[in-house]
Length: 435
Image 1 (cartoon, rainbow, N blue to C red):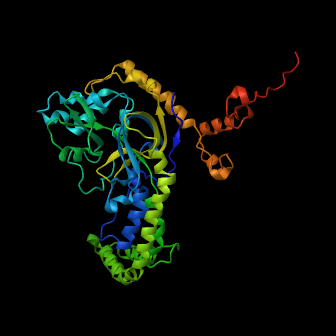
Image 2: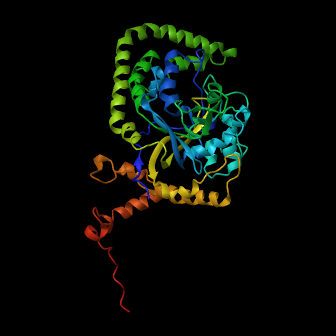
Image 3: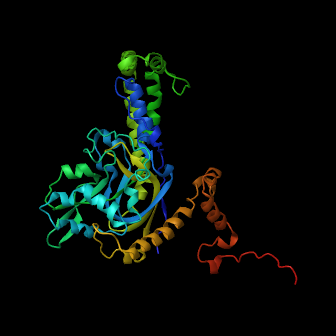
């Protein structure tokens, strides 16, 4: 049994192929306005997300071990108002990682990257590959360099990974959630004691998108166009882009630097004149987005996610270069809570350092094939503007499997509310030819 499917409505980003990835320009490569526009309206809205599996959706099942609330970020970091949570993938439970306390005097034995690598390379869990770059084994070009200036240490770049610290509770001899939020593995290693009191759980990071970056981008775009010498929304290159195309051939980036400096000097008085209007537009978009998300987007979704429960989650599988680099489902598209009985037999205690029994692997594969297939076949809820039905744009985006389910839902015999035997209809039977 399972709860109803929750469809996460926030989907504002795109992802890019690894060959098309572009990092944020340096100060000498573009003007301040161009850098800000690229960062806000391209990089943060998807340019930093590298498509894995061709940008298609993936499905994961596991135990939620931590939540990252919308209000947990401060300052300009709060521009990203996604609601995130972290999942320990089947068949593991937090207490399984007590195995890494066998030698608390040997930090190398419970180093966060080692724990992640044990789960991926030794356990054989069918879900473990979601935490690594699928192209590594295929000998295809690797991922780009992460944008995070702190960067992972040598040997783990570019894919650092993600983890959640659980602490050892001596009275119960169990691992319980700590006050530390999830983070990249190298940061978990560097910022916490290496005495076995904190153990990193290797997780899949899941992000339900908020609208703030999108709202702020829309509000600021007209001003950023003006700062670059363009009429808002007008097609064609800006004067600065023409300059870069003309002088960009000069060696050592001299031409680009000249263009950038000239652009910034020309834009300065315009920026000063527009500053009050820009600040007002920025603040209005910032607050409006949060109010909208609290009511309709991340607010309702966040109420459905509880630590310790098992969920089926689908979303676009990406690699996030905006940090030190980790895989994630971004955006999350569906969330469904499973009753404990659906997976209880798989959660019987496993040492992540050892291969799983084949019966467990087969059981995980069976659960994944059944639940992931059913969730991915479910059509989304109808748009309120569709009078209870899906709108033509929604129908156009359905997969063949979703379209088949939706078509069957429209049949009269399936249009019941209380119970099919009470207010349902009998299927129409075609007349049989006489014998």
